[in-house]
Image 1 (cartoon, rainbow, N blue to C red):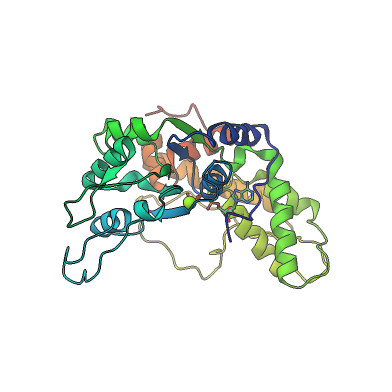
Image 2 (image 1 turned 90 degrees about the vertical axis):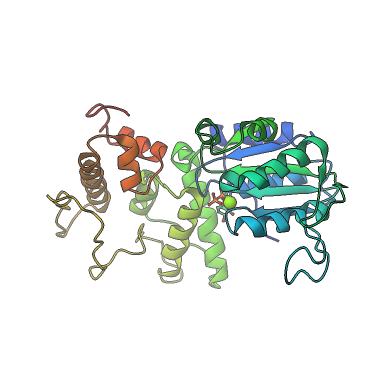
Length: 336
Ligand SMILES: Nc1ncnc2c1ncn2[C@@H]1O[C@H](COP(=O)(O)OP(=O)(O)OP(=O)(O)O)[C@@H](O)[C@H]1O
Ligand SMILES: [Mg+2]
């Protein structure tokens, strides 16, 4: 199954440090919070925490808290009694009951309702909860691992997340480095994903990447992290002829001359002109020019408010900071 067999690859010092932290905290019975940008491997780390713990023979259940409506989330986590609501004909065991003796992984828990947060706090503190529609108090022995890609302390400071729950959840916090901070790992991961894809395509061997392709992979900032790299590499491999080295890397699958224009970039002056395409060209610097022009246009539109510019670009604040640093665009405006 995915997670159990998937190997966590990487040799970058920042990544090895995370693996050490994981081994250290895994045998404890305490909750752990995993923080990291999207696609950095939070789910794989959660699974590793479980399988390195003393509960490894027990259940490892997952729940994506952002994927379902609040009322359903409550019944999914804590179960419901027969007759709790229309259609509840039978008693339903929630994830906490089913994970008894094992680990429950709560993914994307930042947006959970106050009610669910209250129940979570109680189950962490006392191991106690009630099924929806029930008055009997049940107990369970479950280790919680939670993950999020947002900054929970800021949410708590804004009153959008319970501080007491955050304190309990965050006995220890494991923060995964973004891929752009793990430069040594880009090639290792790319090779791994390419070899798997080649196997899937029935190729006898994988002939590697061209030096230009490697340069491009190494210079992209990977806002979608390992997941984005995996997609980009798999797409590049299947579009390459069997036995040939991979030369063409398309970072954006939406790239097309016929792509419908977006109408929500309301700058009256319009975005800065995208550099013209003419061949021969250096793809890498062309892509960089586009990135720089787009970021500068967004910064202008946002009146140099970096948080706002990040929103305009669907980036996190830290991702935008990464780009600004990379292209040395920092210092041109107030950092607010
Ligand atoms: N170190 C790694 N070695 C091998 N594969 C990895 C590694 N890290 C992540 N992956 C792969 O990248 C993809 C994304 O990983 P995962 O789902 O764990 O990320 P995530 O942080 O939970 O993302 P999201 O925030 O979007 O839920 C998966 O296909 C996973 O197998
Ligand atoms: Mg995830």
